[in-house]
Length: 329
Ligand code: NDP
Image (cartoon, rainbow, N blue to C red; front, side):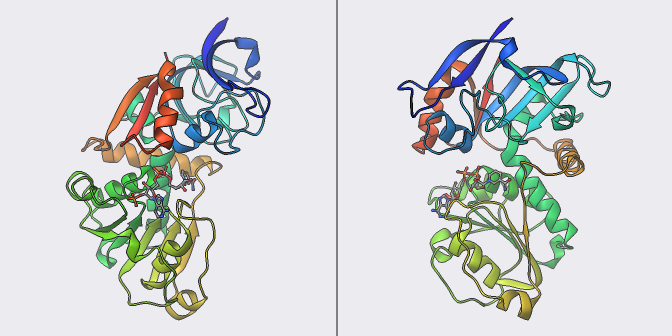
């Protein structure tokens, strides 16, 4: 049977490489679990792929979409009976394998995370890769012994997807959050909506600085890399920890060994794409716990599959605030 999907062909050979088309089910790889996709979300990475602005897609043609929430409709896995709701983020979907911007999806059993009780399918789409990455970063801080009473946590790229979730989760868990942002209009959002304690203009950290600076925070979640990450490390308190998640400013990192050998600072990385199943389950369970006594304050809009190409362009132009949830069926 055919189903609707966003279908990307090779932009090097095709002048119209992104279209909503009817795809035959046999196009999907034969994998043990078939899902009816309920929601996907539109991430920056998806927008780059759809608008062919970066080489996100490893092979064409491909259905994009790095996040997917769906209902099992056929299964060869006893772990995944028909009717069960599952989340898939990462694992190369929407890059190497057909992704979530479609009405149907086939998956390996190990790609699936059961939707925890207390999280709605819309919440799961809203959280998506951005929220999962933020939660993994917070779990890293906890594992490194960074508790709320030890001091404030800095979050860079705070008004972005990963930064917004990081700020909200940390504030909910009782941490003092210093939100680092270049958005002059974000104060109300970061402080009143997400719970940050204070804002630091990103210009204070975006240039090359001294390799050891006065101590300002015990931990940091960094979404931007480059000089910002170097400055975060340089101003972290003794025995503190910095979690590197992103590279919005740049991939490079120029620092010195001083923060590590003079202050015992730890630098930890987070990769949500291929992170272990146990870590994913722990992260989604923490969301379920948080959502049992609060609702997600992250702004979002819901669009249909037909609007995904237009919204990908608007996302790249910086014309969208908040997350985009795609209702696929
Ligand atoms: P967004 O585009 O939503 O947010 C990035 C934020 O970074 C912006 O909102 C802005 O925040 C800030 N920013 C943008 N440009 C610059 C710049 N030149 N210098 C300093 N700050 C800047 O992206 P996401 O939150 O979805 O992702 C953040 C990063 O994390 C990306 O690099 C992404 O690739 C990466 N990522 C990593 C994952 C992982 O598994 N490790 C998973 C998902 C994303 P503000 O205006 O507040 O300053």
